[in-house]
Length: 372
Image (cartoon, rainbow, N blue to C red; front, top):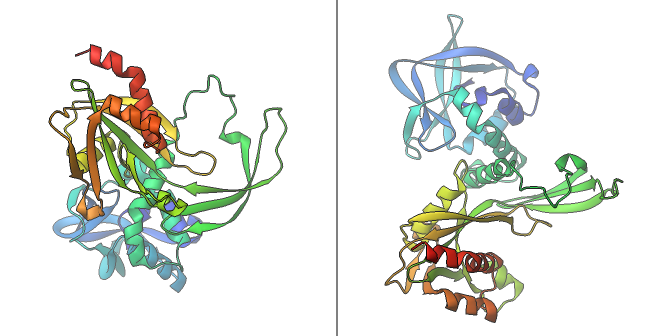
């Protein structure tokens, strides 16, 4: 097999094949009349036939059937297919196979750089690859194609988490004071539930006993509350939510802020701006940081990056929003700030992030309006 992209990164090849790099027979190799490019706006490369160019890569030899099955499962998740080629190693020519992309799925970007990829994307890719390989034998490679963006987003959330909130009132203990005693079988579908035995340092300096726990491995989400300081109006969105439905709530349509998944490699602020355009067709004039908070830290990794979006809401009442391609059925409500606070008082606003963001705005509203 000739690899020209991310599988030239030893830790990734080890993860996919399930053994150490020193147990894998590899040689540097080249493929003439081919060039490697980034897939546009993606974190992986594509190879193309191109005259008078040379693609550099790695020839991997003596692969077992299990190796091939593992590779085909992993690369199948990227919608690649194998084609025969001839590659050169120290002036000798070898027959090999290469994974070529489905060129209809992605556009060609800039010329590929393994070094640039390793610096920016390797950790996220390794985390996502772990999610891919743990599903081998349980789902098809074709299903992995649709799951990959979510695996990457979940991996990206772990990178965003590496800068903690201040510890002024909180104690100085860290994640190093928590020991995973044992990993237990969890759940790996569209969602992921991690199960484990854990022991942690206690406030009195002693160690807790091993405790059985589970964590719902979720995503980072960007939330936006649109506000017009001139008209003193806010925009709320309404949509059906199946958490409320499955709890047994007879009114499962809820009021929320604009919200959306932070895609892999995306800045949360950019996600908020993107979602405001998709869900409410807004043109924001300013984005103001609000609190960044965990949704339910006892059992979920879900994390909210909250923003206030200043914009012109004049002349807008009730409208429709959302993307049909994402099966979104969203209604927008532009109401006065006082009306929104009445809904908080009555309990009709029963989604915690929206209540929190409206209360935050209540604290800042006077100074925002004074700047007009």
